[in-house]
Image (cartoon, rainbow, N blue to C red; front, top):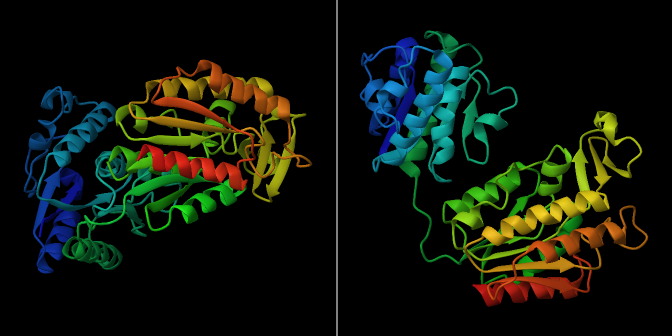
Length: 397
């Protein structure tokens, strides 16, 4: 059994963090308390001092203990990330505190592989936690009261966190090594028939992991690819790029399509749902988009059709990423439409806009034997297109 790491700022939270450590140890799980304070070098009862952690910063401990809280916290977060990455005895992490703890411990947790137990007790857990969780499998627990001393509430919540971490560390098992190769597929509601058709055709040959292309889903797909969990990316729904470049609310960030530029894994992809930019309720759409073509998906989601100009920009952006990819690439273009709404008689059917996208991808991609653009005379959800995707997967893996 590896060790549970209890991490926090022992200069202000020593009593609470030692309580968590002792609760985990009482469950028979090895535990190491790690101080990430940025004010002093004292041990504060921790097993690993803040100075020891800070020494892992690329510029050394002096980059951490600057005396200015903002820069010190950011530097300590970098140092902690480097520290946990090189620990072979790490079985799980639990942190506790407020915004400072989330800012310090969150990046280190996000840098670790999916599946390693991660639990963050934070007073920010009842709000928007995406900045702290990102694409990782971090569990967050709201402490109800502030993490400031032990009382009848904090003891119960912190004990629950400790017991949860002890159970996760004790029960953790490595994934089976003899499983099927895993594929990462991206999907949206308007590309569901395509993705489901591909997964059905590949059943029994590959384990298909489907990610909802809502920003966090694309980030999770990229992280699993970066961590080496995937035999290939089957990125059929690249719609998050439209949100990134056109001001939508479901962007996965600038690093979308980044993992295949860092790892030589096969990349099979398409233009799924690049006909749309996502916003929340209709009244939230920015005023600069007045007069555009919209479709109200439901009371909370409004879709905006991309224009020929936007699609040319999107196509060029995709081509630039394709040109940097290290593994074999097959980018399949569905000439009959890129989503359920982009078909004859549907609200987003706009052949000229699609043509601008398709031509930009084709013209700006550097074509090689390993990197090919394949035009398919079919809609993305048609059986003929699904068959081309399956053929590409089987030929590249």
